Length: 548
Image 1 (tube, rainbow, N blue to C red):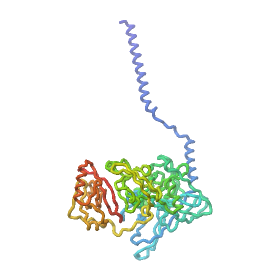
Image 2 (cartoon, helix red, strand yellow):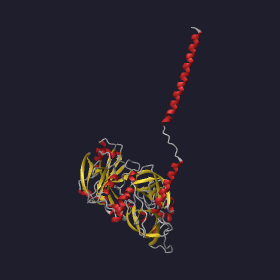
Image 3 (cartoon, rainbow, N blue to C red):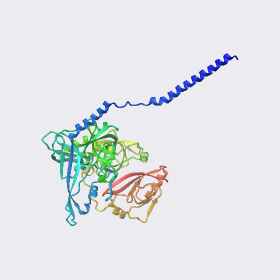
Image 4 (cartoon, rainbow, N blue to C red):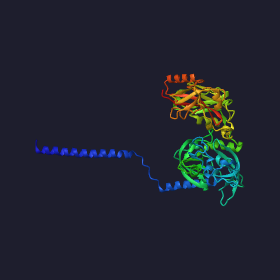
C-alpha cells in the first residue's frame, strides 16, 4: 500500500473520531438539557403583581372590618362550692371535648374554643356555703348578617349569657357598647344569632359558596383574638370537609373548613372571608396541645362552612329554632370488614331503631345499609345525617338500602328531630356515675380466645344490676382483654346480642355462633352489642378481627 493511501486512511480515521466526539457531545447535551426543558418554570412575579396582591388584601380588610363586631357576654350562675376551683380549673368547666367525653378532673385536650374567660367573682368571706353565686365573662367575635342589626356568632360565645354587649366599628369614634338580645342558638351547628338595635343601617357581609372554595385558596380571618379588636390575619384553606365531635355525643360538626390563618381565643364567631370579601366560614375552634389557658394558634384553625350558615341562620331569625327531619335510628360507618359482610361498598349501617320513631313505623330494619336518599348517594353516616336534616318534618323520603346483599327501597315519613338530639335540651344528670357500677363476675363463664372476651349468661339479677330493660337478651361481657382483638370495641357490661346477625340468648348459642363464624372462613366477626351509657340504652354494631 502506498504512503498516500496510508495518509488518506489516517485522515478518514481522524474525521470519524471527530464526528463521533461532536455527535456524542450533542447527544449528551440533549440528554442533560431535556429534563430541564420539560420542567415548567414559572416566571417571577412582577413588582406590579405583588402590589396588586397587597392591594387585594388591603381592600378585603377595608371592606370587611366595619361589619365585624366584638362581643362580650356575662353569665351569673349558682354553683356548689366544691365546683368553684381556681382560674385554671374554671376554664375546664367549659370544655369542648373534641376527643370524646372527658372524665371529671381530666385535663382538657385536643381542639379548643377560641374563647377566653374572666376570673370568677364571688364572696370569699363566706364560710363553706352550699351554693355560691359567681360571674363569668366571655369574649368573642361576630359579623353583621343584615343591616337591621342581626349578627352571627358562635353558640358558645353567648349561650347562657345574662348580658350581651356588642362593640360596633361601622363609624368612627363610636365607643358605645350596645346591648344585644339573643335571637336563637343552634347547638347542632354551633351557630347563634344576636340582635342589636341602633338608629342607623349597618354594613352587612355577603355569604359566599363554601362548596366552591378550594384547598390552597387565600382566606382572611377577622375578629378579636385575645381581646385585640379588629385584628386581620391571612392564610390559606388547608383542608375541607373536616369533622369535629360536638359538645355531646348527639352532635358532630361537619363540612368544617381548616385554615392556617391565625385564629386564637376571641376569634370565635368571626368571619373567614375570601379575597372577594365574602364570608365562606365562621371561625369556631383551634387545634392545640397546650392546656386551655395557654392554648394558642399552632397553624390549624377551623370554621363552619358558609353553606351551613345559609341553611341555619334564616330559620333562627324567623322561627327562633331550626327544624330538621328525623329518622330515629342509630347508624355506623362501614369498616372494610362490614363492607365485605353486608355486600356494600359505601353507605350508613343501621345499628338500632328507636321505639316509636319514624323509622319504627316503616319497613326499615337493623342491619340495613342505607346507600341513597331520594336518589342522592349516601357515602357515610355524615352524608345521611346531612341529607335527612335538610328535609322538613313530615316529608316522605325513599331510602335505597342493601339488605341481605340485595337492593330494595323503603319509604319513611320523617318526624321532627327532638330537642335532646339537637342539643337544645340539657342532658340529665346521672344519679350514679357509671364508673361506680362494676359488673359482677358470675361463676359460670365462657372465655373466647379468638375475641379476647370473657362472657357469662345474662341472669335477671345481673340485668337488674346493669339496669337493662327486661326484653334485652344475650350474654354479658364480664372481662375484656386489654390487648385482645375486642379491646376498645367491647366493654365489660356490654350485652352481646348477635354474632354475624345470628341471635344470641345464652352461652350455648354464643358458642354455636362462634363455631359457625369460624367455619365461614372470615377473619372477622360482626357483633351487635347493647350498652347502657349516660342513662340510655344503646345498640351498637362493631367488627372484631379474629385469629381462629
